[in-house]
Length: 382
Image (cartoon, rainbow, N blue to C red; front, side, top):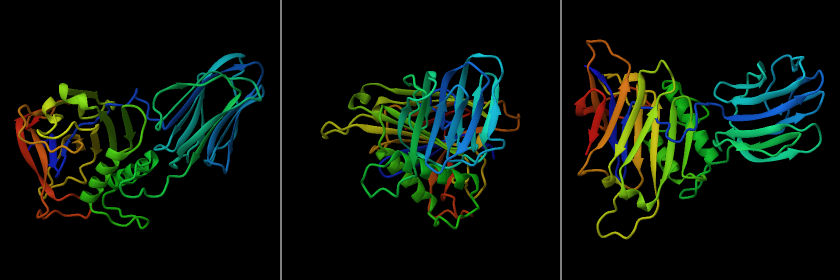
């Protein structure tokens, strides 16, 4: 059997199109850090970097002529103090927190300092404040997973970014907190990474129920702006707000894969305007959401034949409250991939849920892959 290249599940009210493509529609740049603070420091004498773990849930950066001091709620690396380079002058620096790698580090000029190897806790942003006392920092800015746009900050001697733990589960039909969604994606990513490993802390939830819950939370999560993205090791989700005027034109999404060694180089999705047009006889519809979810694992979508999906990339597309069928123009997925051996035939296939399928394992969806569209890197659904 040839290697598979795309898949689809049709739910009751939405299209959930599954393929092997990484979606980065709303990601800005290629940074994977959960938090990044940058600035410039005028070094007028010999000084040092100091790191101190704090019991409070905040990350702070404070400057003085003698030291640049960082506080965070993570166990620190040793030593906890490092001398800065000797030449005086203006130094550019950035503090990076990468939760998935568990790293908190500072780059000062051309020097790198690892502050913690245990910075893997999920923290939810509460508020920020500036510190007046001390030597001022210049050209300061911040960006993070909860606010991905790079934001300039006023001149100050330091800043404190306060956090809180993820909230409890949101009541049914209530707006979903962005940090609760982040936590659920993290748990699902861990399941995809270790599909046979069950946690005693979390009860077993069927895969179909997990996906329906994810779809529900993505359509109701509260965020500012027209789009938001959430990235984990094995799952990425992007949400767009669609205005009622979205039905006036086709929607074309294009993305390039970041990892150089990935089998999938880039892809595009063409959603024809017919997908967004309102049903005859219905009043003007309110704002909808378009969801794109990438799974970097085939653990949830394994059929009884153990078919192989190219690069383990499975893509889901949801148009909120829309059943997609009998379109005048098809939904088209086009992707480019690394050269394959001559004896490998790529097929455009879609996932079909089948509860009667005899599939092994406790975390997989029950179903099979169905070929639709032409061979190679293009799949069509109408």
